[in-house]
Length: 221
Image 1 (spheres, one colour):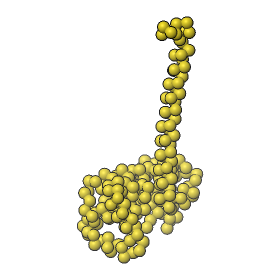
Image 2: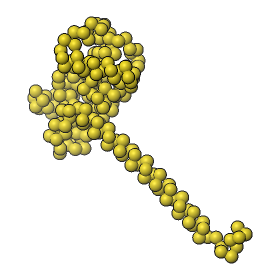
Image 3: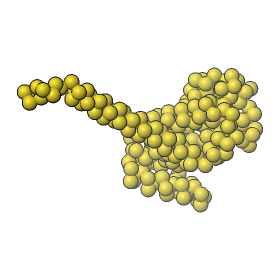
Image 4: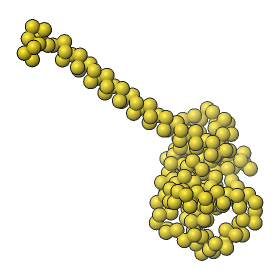
């Protein structure tokens, strides 16, 4: 299925991206992360526009999130019980429940970035649990933006490594976690370097002032 969907991008482009991501947010098993990485690679090759691809992915994500939330809000907790008849779905919902109980609204953001496989189940859970729409939507929008930008730009800048990236993306947690670690590491290195430069500059200034003191008049100063 993955190869078939990827083959449709140059022809149907934005619609394929939009609907694949939207249906994926409803817990329908589609290769959303692989598709978004591939869309970045196609953009690098000039087959589609990068910003349009990102907009289509983001629009699909928000549409799918809102649809899942609304379905669960209308259907109520009984919907989750029906989902739990599947052992796999039950395990994911249980993880989502534990994360939401522990982290609150932050759990929504985490389920769209570092723990992205929980995303669809988190949407259903929030809707069924009666979480305020505004809290869900704000966290969902921020998380979706991070997810889309991370995957699309990775595919764009590393287009020549598409096969390796899509293979890694099949384990969404591992890929996004690695991306997050890279961002944190880059921030830490930048901060450490700035502190080192400031310290070095301070030492140099002190040395310069000392060199300007006249040994004869040192006691007076």
